[in-house]
Image: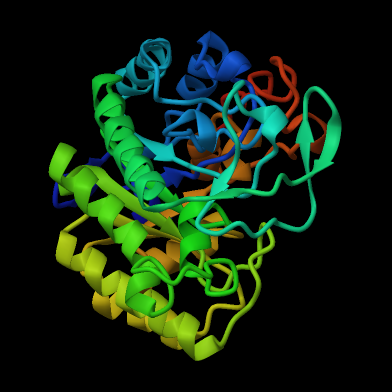
Length: 361
């Protein structure tokens, strides 16, 4: 596993190894505030060269799930400072993932006076958990008008500025998994008839405007974007394969023009090889790949150049000392799925670490 553990340097992204801890919602932010429990969790996992935090809302209306953190208040900025300080002490870098859930929300999970919003007033199928009423159908989103779109963009920019004040090395925009930015890309969810809907370039406009504005505010080298081409998560209806391909090829080229730090691809077997190749061809900076990787398959992707960095999610969730376990060739803890989103320390900061073992050969 030579390349996994070697330092990485490309542009302004300089990391102690080639491994990224992927963003994972954990729902421990009581009252949507980062806390000491979260600071411990991230500090435990700072063997990663880069940590990308759980999805964090840029505004009150983006808090679609219970107990997810925000970055729109001074109290939240202060709470995140303990997280970034702990990670930096161990020589790791940390980006804050900005996640506006859009229509994947229920009004009970939002502060009083706010309603879920979307690029269109199309309700998502399925249910979402609320602390007050258990599982509920997703709320019908309020379609954003032109003024609402401008407010969302402004919220993202201010959130990025807040993240830098909280000590983050940059921000990753969540453009995957069926949340607001991916909702804007999908023609079955985005039925707008203005310049944010219709053609491929119009459906990409919201994402590109947010990226461009944030790059202007904090620097393009502090901005990443996560994408999940062809994903059906969170009621993302499938659409024409060639249109999907052209959408992500166009988006990758425009993001390359903006000069952002990286693209983070949520991989799946449904992504055709030609789309992988189009993204790699169009985007010349760092490519991170995630989903279903083992240490061996991750090393292979680094060696063949299809990925510049590799990200692990549940492996870090269950193994705070995941990098040590890679070096020792295991063993690895299993994930306790019953405590993934439960409040409290159980299944969060209590996973056992590996005792010192002789290096296996």
